[in-house]
View 1 (cartoon, rainbow, N blue to C red):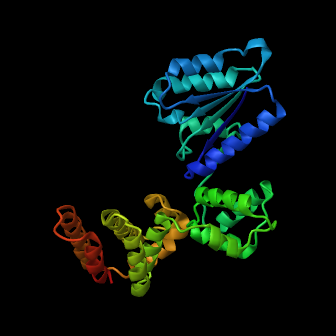
View 2 (view 1 turned 60 degrees about the vertical axis):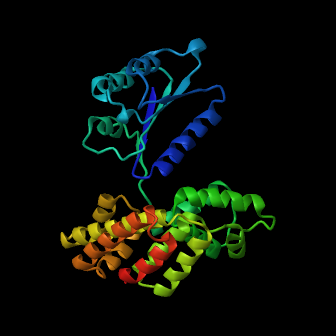
Length: 314
């Protein structure tokens, strides 16, 4: 029996790797039966029975089990499942995917590791992001200018899933053979999420003029001011935690892990955290909380409130 485990801090990338493996096996054997299992909610006995059962008519099967490590009963049946994998000599294939990073000291991880059957996909930093884009563009035979790649990376905030979605749309609309920076700017629209992140970046960079421009843009898009405030509060929370972790001499990789943010965002958070004193952070939290309440009670217009809030941030 062949078995593999895909996991990591980037669920999108690990799931993509799992699907790539499954597609390869299906190409090698078109008659391969694919059986998906929701491991987090499936009855454990059904999983054990399926894994241990023989395929009909000697037709091999591939069982794709998702999130079994989140099953509340895993402590009862996981040992039995691993034992079956170890002794089963059938030609079947089992692919396990977890939407989290499995700790290396767990029995689950060690079982796959000892057979060199584990693949971890972690969040990308800027360097590894561009390595990843080079790989997927080659696999999909998509030609794009280097400055267009950088532009699209910025527009998608270095998010692999968003980059993949946009590059697929660009490839469908491209008639020239090579995607250009101009096409990226013309055909890739700024998303609400990107506008919010641009606002946060401008605030962290202390760029008052650009912050006001983005706030005005959000107003014209009828974005809920409460949502904007919640994102600003999240950014302030990340800055506060970054300030604490750097005071404990934590490395950038440790900070990224603690905050569950992409590694390439940490340097900017560290820089921003140096601009905020503990007193200023406390005042901002109070101001945001009061403003959020006033908006919800209809005591002040939300967009006006954000405009009033902005000077307190600097």
